[in-house]
Length: 311
Image 1 (cartoon, rainbow, N blue to C red):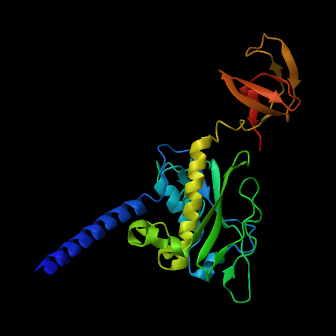
Image 2 (cartoon, helix red, strand yellow; image 1 turned 90 degrees about the vertical axis):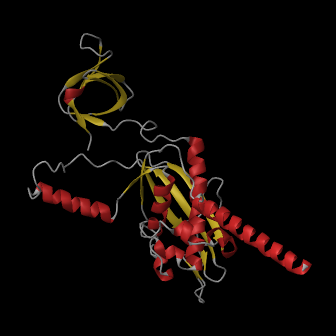
Image 3 (tube, one colour; image 1 turned 120 degrees about the horizontal axis):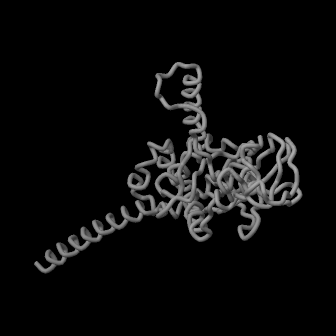
């Protein structure tokens, strides 16, 4: 009798433990992708065009890692995601129809409507070591990373089920690399994705469902997630603002004019302006007057109607 009661108590305790663990696991996987309270700008996710192993993922029957990173970005709400892939191609086709007069009146499709990307995010393999056995793929893809990152050797090993990747966030206007983060994962890390379905639930819609189907796909996912988590932490600390941190687009003088010391034509002239000269707006404006600098460092005010955007 005592043994029966003890057995029932143990079974009940195990049931409670399993249920509690399942709930805890679901919460852990759902919160694996970091989130932000505000967006830090617009971003497009693209592949490295110059990588000799650009399509490494095909040999693993995976989709492009771009699809994977887009899911991270979308769910994190840290950036506004811009489509510079198939969606852009389709948009261009739609705009071409509008330009040819094929769309109905009032369709409101035309030039000057697309958002500019503040940042470009590039997923890559940090490195690899090719061998005759085919256990590893890639080749020094990411090269040697400067700064605190140092050199990393690893890549993707099918034998060890490990992955070393890198994510780079670049400011489009200045080309400054805002954040470079490495990510690492191995088979023993897969406890985080044991349920699979909870974490990978939104990946199918994002075109990255293949990463849930194999161990190596899950390892690669964990490695990129590791890098993305570090990148989000870095961005939250540095608080970048691509638009505010960069100078205004340069302009050229379209008509002859004068650079004045103040925002009125009765102030003392700084210099004469000739057509074709390049000027750099400071961002300060007063009505139709813009404050600018020339290529020699002279600063003053000019009437904006005589200017045009540099091309």
